[in-house]
Amino acid sequence: QYRFLYWATWGKLMRGTFVFEGEGHSDGKVMKVSGRKKLGIMTYSHKAEITPTSFDATFGSDVKDYGVMKLSRPE
Image (cartoon, rainbow, N blue to C red; front, side, top):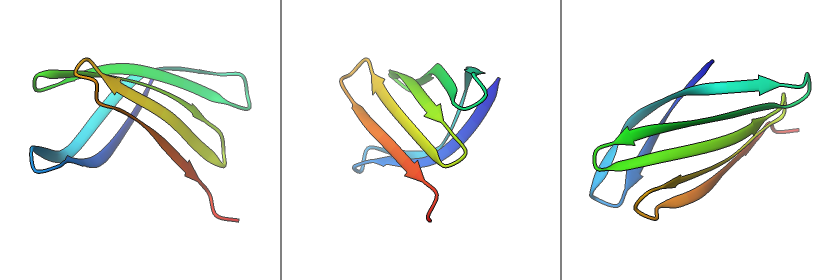
């Protein structure tokens, strides 16, 4: 199990802190996680690969809102 939260805005329509929960598994080097959440009229799904130095994720909704999140530790 995992849980993360983030602050997001969509133009002037919607903004706030969102909490996602889901299932994950690790091979000892990379943790892969995925989940779905209903936010108002939209349902979002997300997938991520997490290492000690990076967080690479994709997300999408049933109303064609989608994107990528890439985070890395500074050297």
